[in-house]
Length: 111
Length: 115
Image (tube, rainbow over all chains, first blue to last red; front, side):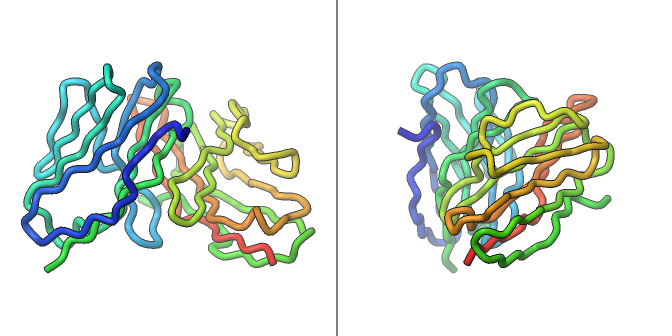
């Protein structure tokens, strides 16, 4: 079983739609959680950190459920520019150590 | 300012040859990480450094892979006696590590193809 599991998609949604991505992680001792975005043929970039209380950044909302070892990302009012692969990321040992990535969920927002 | 740079961007080599991949982190960043990314997968950790010290090399697949960061800045990932299964995108990332700067910034990667 992979340490971080995501639905690979693809998710094809119309502009303006709300879309949610889910992720589960296996190591209950994991400390930090993130969503990264990766555009086609580009490097991954940090989208947002995920905090226990949940957090929002504009149209993006991230949630963490430590008991269920579950992370989610909600995108409201999807834009064409949101089309990308979204990577669920877990840091097991603290901020200085390596990141463990899921395989990513591919999103295409259609006009 | 300049981001993380990697060279070469593309490397095609024959099976059995050695290759050296270079990473130039963001200036002043303490930590440097190497990852490998297969098509359709997320990056997979290989090794990381704080300054010049290699802190964790548990992700290196076997002893053909090695990395160094002798002066705490530029790093080289070396693969000896390359095999076809080594073909992948090799990504470097750096992290400030001071003043609470924890984000890892990734470079554009080196696409390695072993024929």
